[in-house]
Image 1 (cartoon, rainbow, N blue to C red):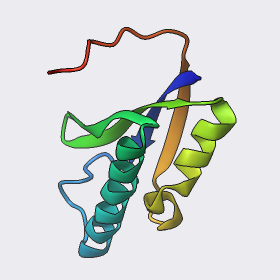
Image 2: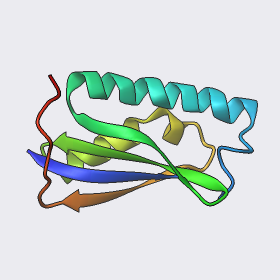
Image 3: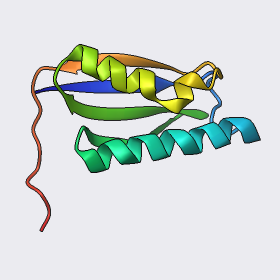
Length: 102
């Protein structure tokens, strides 16, 4: 298994603060998609990162290879929405994980 950092880039620097109703509905489907992958174990951590007047999304995934990471990214409903979101997929050659909380 391998780890990858996925950075979701929004269609404009001020998103999500100026998100339209349609964009926010698509974001809800995006959140549900990644929640399912977190429960299944392929998504280690997922969430928004606020930067300046906007934000970007991030996920660390544990999958077989870069093609599997690309498949996860391509399957995200926010990509299919046509609103202009895109992923950068970056390999993580090693990671340090804290022990599970008890």
